Image (spheres, rainbow, N blue to C red):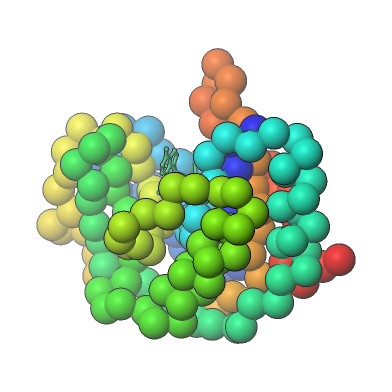
Length: 171
Ligand code: 3AM
């Protein structure tokens, strides 16, 4: 099972992100993320077996995460594989601390793959034809959060869809 830890946007923010995804798609093409899949990845855990997934679910349910508020105010791109995203202009210390804490707790649970550098971002497009965000509107959105989710990424012929396995603070 391919798992990751993520923040899931509150409904009003999801709707705004979806509008931005439409605008970006009109300009850059590629594959627009479905509304239901919009998220901020905190940690990609890779492939785990079912036993590990159950244990990770228990751990996630036991987590209390400090409430935070992430400011989204920039467009960004990753060359490969043609990602267009929105994220923060400035580093966000609480979010970075949360990401570090998660990896500190994942390592003893046998999960590797801690990235060297963490760039918090919300993917809006994949395989964009043009990685050009000039002309897209200025953004200033706030993402209040107090919970993270353990998500199963299920890939089939229709692409990837996501299923939540566990939420923090909800034993
Ligand atoms: O949140 P985003 O869209 O940036 O690209 C995948 C997605 O990131 C990423 O994990 C998120 C949930 O699928 N991902 C997939 N495979 C990965 C890998 N091998 C990966 N991240 C790092 N290493």
